[in-house]
Length: 432
Ligand code: SF4
Image (cartoon, rainbow, N blue to C red):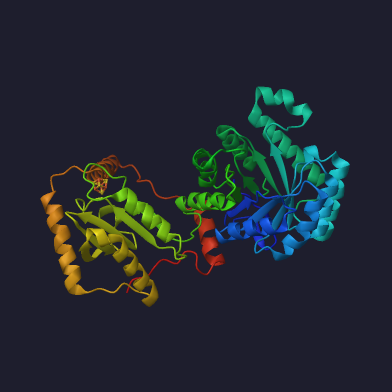
């Protein structure tokens, strides 16, 4: 069940069908105002909606007072063990405070924080971590760690409700991907508050990204989760934001900037695709438009499955083809493929349409048709997939089975809301 309730963190809506919010955490000492602001700007530029800063000392509070004013995105104060710091963070103007009710010194101190948060209109994030569960749940944790995590979270929710405070989101975090998935699924069935998702200590950029994509992606695909943070062992917090966006873009939950698609390559590869794809990926980072760019390692299949891409390239026999919207645009020497692709993208974005030179279009189409014809008998991965899909469709139709359709669930709903919320999101490049 997706969350029904919604909270507002400094203008960013969380839960209740709002787009999944991306957050990251600064890795600087918060008291170092200059370094922290530099990192916050990098995080914001990478597309984060929210940023969290650790506040373990009084001197961090002094910097926090300035940071909440200067930050381009809302700031969440991350507090552990010390309810006085939570009170000071709220007074300092933090847009949200994250705390673990289990380690803040008892219900009375949680009550003090809730009272001030209510008075100031500051939402809270209440979090549970595997490894720091309340003592009375330790035995249950050994028998059933998922039930123990969810019980701890629901007990904290009950405590907040007894304190007459409901302006919060909840997080359950574990280093175990299966436990993160199972506990958040169960929690989403039991409460309707917004959920923050993350995998604790996920690891390096490579392993952490994969673990997060599997764990968070599984939950998000189910419609569970309202805000995400990718935890990576890198000082460059903006890398966490980029990974978060790739997960959201892959699930088509949100759009931001270009999407690059590339064939996996095989023995038919006709140019140095590793270098070309890496160069295109880097150059696309400079673009905000949600264009889709395809790179095909050979022209044996024609444009095929990349026909929905806004722009694309493919190559063969020292030559290459630039295509747009499923149609050839022009042939170019292979060593100029990337340059010509980007000049085509730039020109098209500038004038708002793809310019066609009919003679060059015809020349490109003839070149493509000739390569397809020469390789008509090749059983490429794409042709295999097409044959399998055709066979499955025929079998389903013969057996009267309904063909699977994309569910119009929480993901679709969220994407629609996201598109409404942002004037640029959802805008595809248009062709005249
Ligand atoms: S056959 Fe398909 S996978 Fe192989 S290089 Fe060509 S486009 Fe790429």
